[in-house]
Image 1 (cartoon, rainbow, N blue to C red):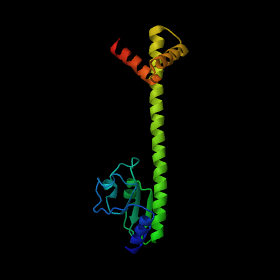
Image 2: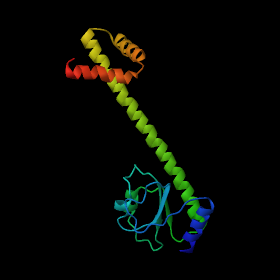
Image 3: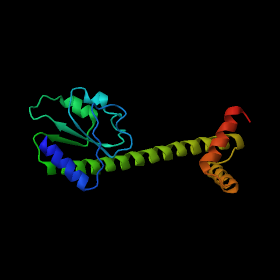
Image 4: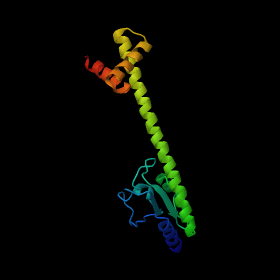
Length: 173
């Protein structure tokens, strides 16, 4: 395909490292920034990651004649789709947009992960406060102050102290 070759030449000119792998397999996506592949039936099952957990941007090249399954494409969760025929520069533009979208999605996933960690930490601290309030008959503010002071004294996070309190409670110590 001349347009694909032109697009790959332009990407190489921009210092992209291109590896041709066929047939597409689940092991192909390690250590790359982007995967550009032709559509084929069952593509969603072969893409080497779960939707929402991509480790590379994905651009799918659709056949000129149509004959593709929209659900199959949606199931592969691409960051870009190109319908044949296309110009070489169009591939470069699609690649840039897909990579930008992938990086944005990765930042969002990282942020969600940090928020989940924070929620988990808050739950630990709240449970540990409840244990201290029940065990020592103190108020919530005093229980939190006790956790915080123990964390500063031991030079560990308040979550680590809360975890220790919960373990003591679990094992009846």
